[in-house]
Image 1: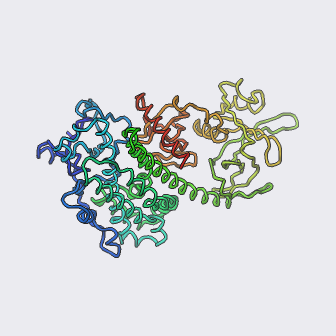
Image 2 (image 1 turned 180 degrees about the vertical axis):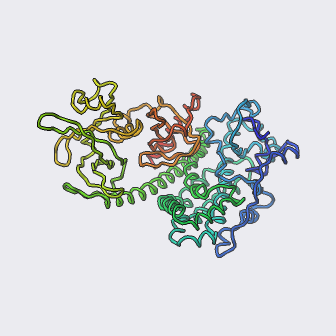
Image 3 (image 1 turned 60 degrees about the horizontal axis):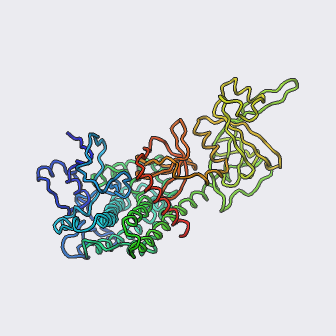
Length: 568
């Protein structure tokens, strides 16, 4: 009891997203298996009541009769909605009943809505009347609509339960509230307009001709609020962290709201990050429609135009968030550095932090009769164009001792187990290191530092992955551009991860990553398929993709998505 076999989940779970599905299960089965879902309430009545009116009232005005998505009392929130377009192992041609196995589902994942299981589709026999490719295209189109509905419901709860909460507002300043929620109301309005047109198109004909024109139109103009919201991400995260750690009243009220049944025990942060998640998934959803559309059809060209616009939107959102974060970081670091040598202006719109951290430097001290090796702690600030070497005075104060342009650097790994392959293998420093079993070493050469001198530094990192990160960051990465991506391991992200360091990669569930480097202590370096971003992430968040057909499809998708990025 309480366990479900894969592929044999009760069809009543589809009530979680769509009310227009025809169910064959008995009423007792429905009653026993259906998830309990709270009824969504209308947004709090206030001066914005017209702006945030109930979704039910909106749909009653825009159409006659019952709509596909009127069953909101059983709706799944977007946090729990997994788009089939992102399920890379899915096989659309296989009957779910034939895919059952003995694997047990430990964590429940709500099923998606399905076009072919809508009552109107089944009653009219449309699923069997159209070709298999057209059915796949209809499923992909319908998924854009159903996932937008789920997303819109989550935004409604964020605004009603959190943003419009008077008890929560009373625990923080107006500035903190603005940083926390930004222009989420505008994002909500944009989503509402988008969904309204999508559903109107769906209500005109159950066999949907196309939605590319709607997607293209809204990506060009209506979705502008997304860029502003994503740009505010750095302030949002910092404000929330500060409020939770220093404001006991805020934390208490927030916990109370999160435990409310309307929030489904989901934390507020899971609602706040939804706009960024949604906007990054739209290109993948549209790309799926492109895949299912015949290339000689005018609809294919329309779909490509829509895909181009949503890809451009994602790029603008990413750039906005990245620019804000980088600018703030540069000013912070600049205030913490004290130059003991000739200074230079650090803050520049074209400069950003790549990696920072403390390393152990092994230095040879020459005495009157002998040489000995000592250890010193150095703190590096590596930017995209320059490396600054410092000594740490305190948590927010550093003395600059050297700096060098990045193109004047070379780096090489030192393995104690293979002394003949290490640079300076006969030097007293290396002999000392072998005797003391020092590990995780690498040699950094500055061919021309700030004084025009050549300097070699033997450095040690605390872990294997930390050494690998420094070598990857300090190197010019010329070889990476020549790597054949088709030879790289692909992994699917099974647990979301938020980057904690500049060189790390934030990932969402179902993201696909190409792995460039694996380190034995549990870290991978990879490239995110959907936008080409590179960085490090924990091995435990991913599982390897082994199906060759899936691997090939992923490479085709990456080619399309990254190809669009170069022409937007």
